[in-house]
Length: 259
Length: 279
Image (cartoon, rainbow over all chains, first blue to last red; front, side, top):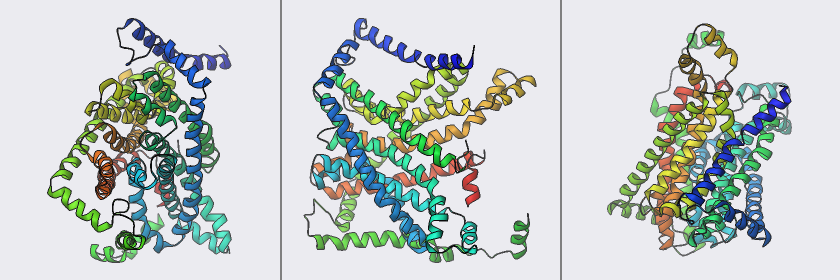
């Protein structure tokens, strides 16, 4: 077998468990005496999916969720990374603030949802606050750590070669901390994604999380499962198409990740 | 090494603990925390918002004392911790054994990897509504969600770890007369261990937030419930007590338990060379 066709077989073989799971689902829901509200038949799932697609509600929920995530991601990082670098450049300031940042990072995320509801009410504001909070503290913490992990020797070497002010920043601090910053981005996005779904469930008025928890009230299990599958697919796309390549082009290239 | 020799020759006096405490990071860090608390307390009369909206640090402290005096907080913390330990323990057990079992044959590992990836991507938060439909509100939802959230990072990382073991090692042991079982014990498990630990660390972190969230939705005790219920009754100070307890608890779990564990295993196996070099 040529290597190309072998790879094709490999790729296709990965589909087998999915097909088997679907077949098991179909059998169980049709002949297994399982009530419809616990496991809706596949046909019904498909109908629900088409219905939600046609009336535009699905698209609205998905784009709403992604929009909130994108806004929070940009705001959170745009503040956190410059601030983190500024904090880390001064030893005293960073020593002063590190425990505070550690602490806030450890409670960032879902735990802020109830407080956010008090401050911003149910809806967009609360959800954005919670995700921004998660991403901000994730990013600022890893930025500070990243700058502090740059070896003293390199610092001295750069100064010895006559680097001045801005040069120290562009030649040493930025590339040195970049790896840690990018790893932090990916991790904080993973927490941010959970916070998004959870936040929408408790404090949202639209979005994928809201759609699924709302469906629980009416025992619309088909909608719940549709939401779950979409949440999985969207995260895979985000992680594999956005963060994996980013990490490959930066972290792996700088050679600090040993796999 | 000459650096070692120099260090021995000079024999630097190690400052005693109190000295390090006063001059070092610990003190500055404590000062930082204190500053935040003071700023918080001072800002309350300045902004003049109602207490349920922006409770002061002192109000939170009083709520903390009250929750302790009434015996609520110790019970909640114990409940949360019990759920966490049970869920993470079971999830680790299932994840590791399933991961090794699947990896016994390269074919099953290859065939099942996409399914594992997909299920790993459906975050536990998204499963909770379905669990609630299946089992109603209660402990079962929380435990299954915790098992799920710990199991998949471990499973995923075990599969990756074993897949990346160079075939040469396996061939070498086989040609030296090693049995299949010996290959597993001597090559595959040690090679996958750093990945398993990484998966465990990731899962343990997600599980803690997952615990808080599932307690908000499906429990009547625990820190998540405290955080959620506090705002529902305009007892925002209680919510903040819950959040602070959660943070402290996580830092304790992370620093006392997880990090030393990781140091003892992963660093020994040499995967975190980078951190070592930069120290």
